[in-house]
Length: 251
Image 1 (cartoon, helix red, strand yellow):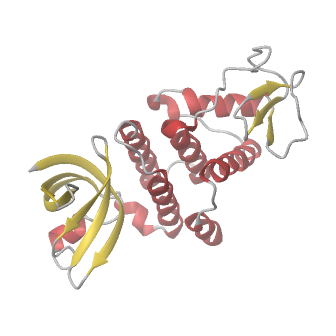
Image 2: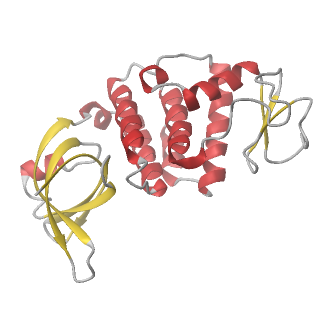
């Protein structure tokens, strides 16, 4: 038996009564778990819903190709994030987070911080006292930072200036250049930060988790931040996500 802490980020019904869930875990990354009778068992169906955070007890079996398969035995719920399911907008946003996580396909080395980020984000989304758009921006950018796409935001890559009235970030090269050193300000990959936006972006990328969600910004800078994080995700993941389109449609 394997005892493991996990968050359900995907589920699909199989056959007449069973279910397969995808767990985000710290130790094993993303794993698929087969739940026998998961559609009909009240206990199993409740604890294997999307966004349930539980301590799972799993059976492990290797197949003929030496691949490890996991089977649900029991679980102890930790947080069901129930309030997310009561609001269509929050539920759609949480589904977008799940799609990002599934696309990222984290290795076990990366998922400790990713699980922490996800649980913290869902906690505030469930609580309903934080700006949803700001939560989305924080999750998008910090997720990519934690999975290998954190840009070097210390300062200009040429003169090492740490801030300027305009700092240029190139999506293609991943480099930061100040306004004096920028090599191609008309590039389609250029995103220009003013001092405030650069501070916000750098804060999200680098601050400790106990401070990550403890700030507010104006609507003006929220729109700028939103534009940046969505471009960042689309460029590095190479696609637009259907769940984000649906979230936009119902908001």
